[in-house]
Image 1 (cartoon, rainbow, N blue to C red):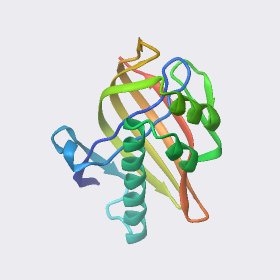
Image 2 (image 1 turned 60 degrees about the horizontal axis):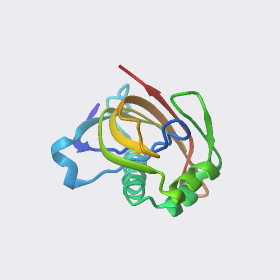
Image 3 (image 1 turned 30 degrees about the vertical axis):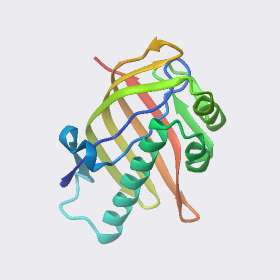
Image 4 (image 1 turned 135 degrees about the vertical axis):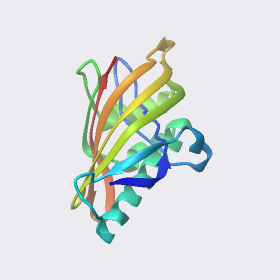
Length: 171
């Protein structure tokens, strides 16, 4: 089932060190938005599942805003303590490394165009997959290009936390 609403997401992280996904739902980006597939193997969504998808999309919106403003506090609040990201080069990045990278402002995004985004919900776990065409720089080095990514969110004590992220450079 494809949702009737459009969404745009921002991929955030550090090329060659950290590539940690963050995203945003925003009406101001409606022209560039792509459709979001939600639980494509189901012909109808339960009310709880729809609410969960809205929560995840809100988390993605907040994360994109935080990325644009280099808000390290957002990462501190929303990444699980045992968060692990795997960069396109196979490097492992922790929560603390992600927060430190945000604080140092060594990362800058100029543009991100996300498509093929899918949200799957499994109880208190949500898996987001997508394609992102990214334009940005880390310490003056260009890391622009196409990526595919997966991010896993887990709801714990009523709050969503990102527990894992993986990005792959594509052609």
